[in-house]
Image 1 (tube, rainbow, N blue to C red):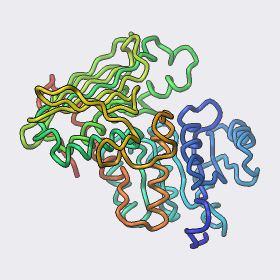
Image 2 (cartoon, rainbow, N blue to C red; image 1 turned 180 degrees about the horizontal axis):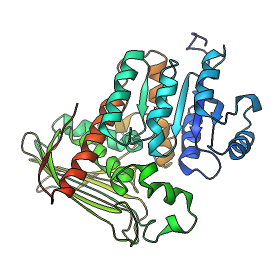
Image 3 (cartoon, rainbow, N blue to C red; image 1 turned 180 degrees about the vertical axis):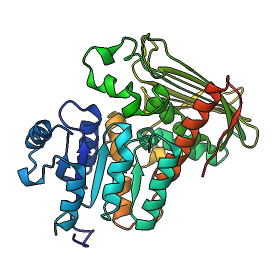
Image 4 (cartoon, rainbow, N blue to C red; image 1 turned 30 degrees about the vertical axis):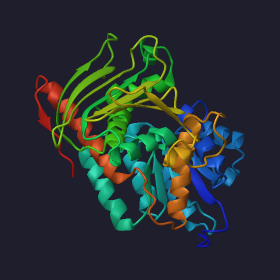
Length: 381
């Protein structure tokens, strides 16, 4: 592989994400948006015919369309023009084996969350990534929003005082019916313990909510008490989760995530209350961040409007008033990865640490639920 990183696009491969995959398409658009990546290879489906049809639709050369991810990792590592990084957009149970196959070949990894289906598997993968010295990006997409980064900056600089309360919710309704038994492939794997792991809505969207709360507040979770529910009869995994949070230092929090919340499309919302003010962010209105202090009118901060110094005032892809959204947030993670790959110092990527903490959170929630909502200490490696 070429070592001239300053004058060419990053050669990207993809595992999963073929025809009909929402998240695969989102990854490809995000990777292209800033013209830093070029998709050149893929094992886009576990079904060979679908894999090759998907590759043809994306104009990949036939010799770089693979039926097997392990074959792809070996073949691309041998090529002088082989991939620099791979995007893993498979069901959860494949994240670790696919990532490991490419890590062993010295290929950098961009992986959907959750990192694994168990904390033990996540730890083993993390150890090997460190040994091989490759970059690892875990795509916690919502941390790419400019106003989420602005909120994090405001909390860190003390704009709302000492954080006391964190409330985060992630409400969807798309699994309010048993779509997994009606031919919906995306619903089917998410409700199959063999593919999704032991967590349903908890692993799919609860981990996003948990990461967002910690990313903005800067708090470290101490212990939690949780209840899982399954509202759709016959569903083997949870479709609703509620968690009480006790953070180190005394702050308290509440998290709930549901995929059966009728009327909610993608309602990820965060509220952080401090000793002198509060912040509110709504993912469906991503250009806005509300700052409120006692006795003062609420202030709405907008992306790209230089009312104050900070990340929200920095120039982005398009001027203020031209809305940016989910795909641009996703692209920000890819842009950050490209900066790190090119050797730029000080680039913070959600990665192994966030992945390990996410799996520790999942396992603590599962344990608390099994033990009657008992308070469980979070174990983070």
